Image (tube, rainbow, N blue to C red; front, side, top):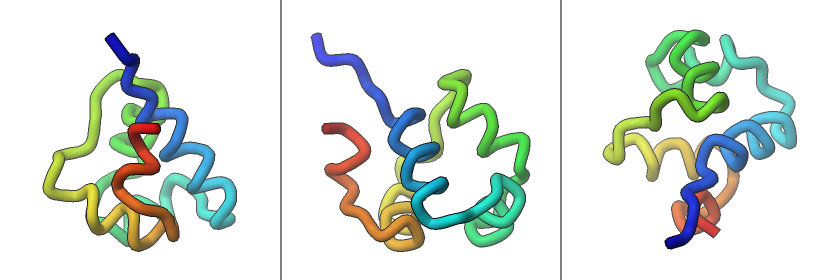
Length: 66
């Protein structure tokens, strides 16, 4: 079974776009703490947010799972 690495992908794309967790969170309407939990792999973003995350981070939804 393939491991979901969305947490690493979100963090890497956020860094590439020069966004802090707070700035990124404000853009999508969640707290910096939520972003931190996503990046640590404690939880995952709601699936309905993925298209918005991909647009902000200049990637495709599929990129989160490759």
